[in-house]
View 1 (cartoon, rainbow, N blue to C red):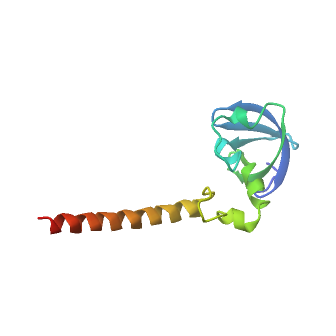
View 2 (view 1 turned 90 degrees about the vertical axis):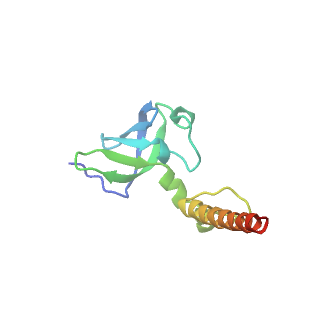
Length: 129
């Protein structure tokens, strides 16, 4: 059984890349997977754009399932090192959304705006009848 624990920061070497992520051989000799969504805080179209075989990486252990599969995240380390304001989403005056909370806020604003426009349109149509 692995001596690794969830939340541990580990180092390893990228030993292969696949369309869905990169396999990393850890210093302990075990192999973990960095899913494509866990490579960077920005959108990653192709794993090879960010990671190459032979690259040394530092990652956080997200989980270890009962069968021993190790899930890693490079993104988690970069998010932890960002100032709290940036982790929250940064500039609210039009900067890019950076987190799930920002997406939810954006959707709420969109829904409210959409409902207001639909109400105004319905009132206008009713008035014109």
